[in-house]
Amino acid sequence: NITVGTPPQHFRVLFDTGSGHLLLPSTRCTDAACKAHRAYNSSASHSFAVLEKRNGTANGTANASMVPLTKDVEFNSGKVHGELATERVCLFEDVCAEKAGFIEALSESSQPFLGANWDGVFGLGLNISDSPLFNVHAGLLRNFKLPVFSVYLAAHLGEESDITFGGIREDRMESPKDLFYIPVSSPGYWQFKLDDIAVGGKNLNLGCGCKGCCQAVLDTGSSLIMAPSFVYHLLQKKLGVPDTDTPCTNMTDFPDLGFVVSTPNGPYTFNLKPEDYMDRISDGGQDFCWMHMTTVGNTGRGPILVLGMPFLRTFYTLFDMEQQRIGFAKARHNATEGKRTGRDVPMLGCREGCPKFNATK
Image (cartoon, one colour):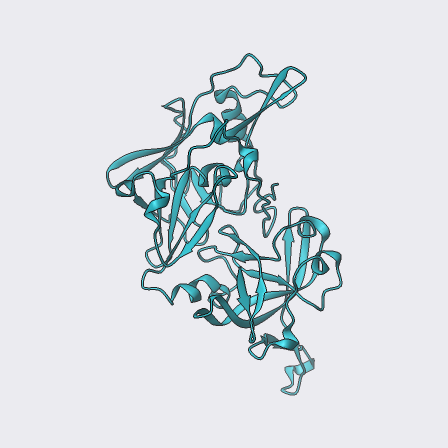
């Protein structure tokens, strides 16, 4: 939850490392998606300020009228139109960003917003907003001695997910001493270089030595892993996971899926167990399996893997803005009865700027 405005107005937001703006529905919005959620009332806030531009006139006369700056945001299954403004945004009463840029949504499509259990989207991208003014999280982190935030995603309904600003939670790691960092490879998204992908402990030798090849992006707004089409189909074949309409009743052993990176101490493989990257359900005496993975189109940054919920619930992740690096440690999860599946913790993901990324549910 966050508060916006003076006096504060309360909102529940989706913290999304794959987008760069704070987006809130406006009380001026008449769409059903806006009316179904708590909406921001600019007229009730003393700290609100609209961002304006001079309306174009012949010869650019100085007395041209001023009009609000607007922005259209395209999502995979919908869109938003809004005005750009600044406000006081707070995590807590004394942890605030003053004059932070945001989008006051005047129109929201029903998908994906109408059924969402959050009011707005809080973008946590490293540097993908329109300008530093809209990096709200950077303003909030100035309140802390340690300008980082970290993410822990629950693996089952007996746990709670959390995001921590300005600190590190060692209790969320299996072994805090094993926390390590890798640099952001291309400032913008929380993006890093992969050396290879491994299946069953064996590297696929994808040829990741070229500059800009084999990049990965961390995305808390996605419930899936997304990969270029050729990588997706290669992994489906190597992992041996059949199509969803093909029974997998007699298939009991699937290999680990690994993402290989370079660290100061040598190569490291982020290993996902079958229960991390796939799901299994029984129906009519037969089992059916499917991967928590889909294809992603052209991102404008070359072939990129988007590592969403299956990856992030396996690894506790630390985002360091000041040093532009990402920290990783194996996440600690409480023991539960029964088999953990991806459907234990549902997440709705929305993606800004499609076809840059796809929306997933």
